[in-house]
Length: 343
Image (cartoon, rainbow, N blue to C red; front, side, top):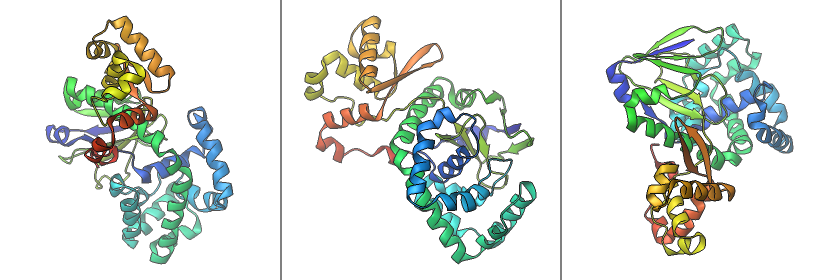
């Protein structure tokens, strides 16, 4: 069990990561190769990625280098998932490369004590060896993570839409209370199911916490083993894909294509909307709003999941693309990309 202790200052500084963290994606996707548990959730990814790794000649490196350094166990080195990864792949890999040799040796030694480390791992303290290792991480990311970036981003945006609703309805504490069945909020402590061999308390001491939703993670959240590092809690996603909109009013082209009410419904759903909110935005009855949502879902433009007493509808990547196309090039030039939000 993990118990995260929040003060009022910590609650004020707690935030939700604006996008996927590619270094955590690398680490946790490697865990997916080490168990059959929950494989149904990533069955297509597992099958396709295995084939791609073979085609790229990376299967040997996967077995001999990556899997031993990222065991699905009580511990793997913190320097492999630096806090800077929240700023993107390049920033994260630079941080891996810049880790002090003494820290690398210490964490590899801890890995060896906890689950065993390959004999060559201590050489990661050497700059040249770590440069080769970082190249391998980039190659693995290109094969196993990058092809799924749109899907991952969509899932995270759906999660953000739901969590932001909790934040607006009940503040940070409501958001913490809604992170999933593996976590329980009892002020001022967040109780989280953790690795069975670990029982620990994490005191944030006014630093707040970065919440990082993970596409590849199942069941239990993960945090750094070193309590002195910036507090991060990586937790499993609980919602289907969605992508934020680039326009609240797609205008005449979309209306001509799918009708005024259905176009209004799609715009409303762009921010995440319940059936009742769709009805108000489109000026139709609740039953009509439900039919419009069904048609949009059947067309692959939205996805729907129950959220509390309501059904929350969010965009799929295809739905977001439709709104972008309807918005026109002038709008696209003046709009921030989804990846720039909160990075």
